[in-house]
Image (cartoon, rainbow, N blue to C red; front, side, top):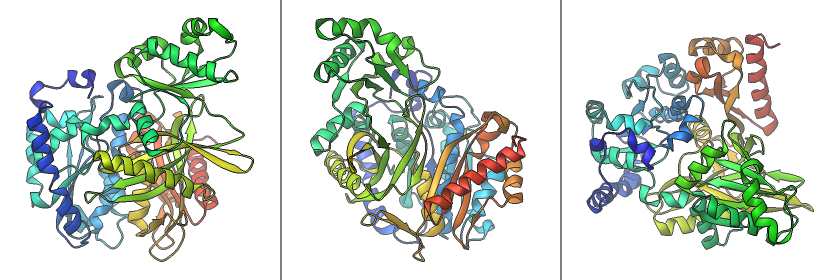
Length: 517
């Protein structure tokens, strides 16, 4: 946790990082293994899931994310756990969620009356729309924490799930006396850009040539110089903040007009501010330089090719220490140089999905040795040359990323599984399913469309998920639409083509309803 995040929290809001705190947290976490082994597999077991969808990130990263508090709605897919008849869900958000949105999700539950599910759902809110992380808001509200405790019938059969785990989430676990099904925050350095490169090296997984653990621009200048000296024809390099989120902490450095020989380092020094192009549209050199000095970063080759993909492998290390390959995706990226996450297609291309799974397995084994727990993603860049794909690992995200909630929703709706051997997903009835998912359906014309409006539009145009065919559309981040003109959608089909058609249908309907066509 950085100093800026801590600044607005009261000192008593969370425990200091002491040996005693770590000991108590370790004792709390020891409950997870028996819970995972005995309760999780039993569909009829009584248990409680506390969902804390806090994006506990650097305050500047959060400020750059339009409608950040509504990203807390992405984990509403966890309401599908109410399909288990004795499961209780406690869902906490910064601001109250519209009842229309909750009804929308509960009506997706297969085989469970809505009233039955609603009795087992507790919705709580901080009533605080500020930009600080939700977990920090919760720690500042002891009465809210007492309400959470009161909503847990049996604390020995409860766990917390979250977007990412930091000292704040650890503090919440200790305050609530409920284990956290997530990685120990003490290991978060493995999820930085520098830490990821160290793990790739240990795992023997290829990565772009570059330099990590750069402390400031004084370190960055010789690193960029050396990259060019080693590869005289190099056109671009990527500079990444260690704790950048969703690609918005990245920048591209251009070597155009760079000289050869002894004058190169001075040229880099003089041209760094103006030759660095930022992925975040509102970023400036002065601010980026400050952030780089605060959190450090890396510099590596900008890999290019005629055919470039950005696949990702989602993995999990469970409380029993077992490694699971959960899914693969091809990420849909945008931004000035194609490094900002916009959405994904599932599953990844079978031409290379098994190859990246092998690499992700090696990475997972190193992370298991370090004690990592829970879900994480390994991102790659894949380039096809002469009909052969070559893969380089880019980063590790120890959290529930943008590919987590669409896959969970698909699983909950279809009771299916991803088969790493084939690279395909099958429903419980043996049907293959594919999807296109996006958190970034945006248009200024969407401003003013409240949740009730969107549901009317969806019903009138049959933009829904059909339980009989197990195909169709599920919306998320519905609450962001009216103010931030932003919406998310999961589009499920029996082929990639059908999934993309559903997505195009969504855009066409919204264009029609907003007078765009």
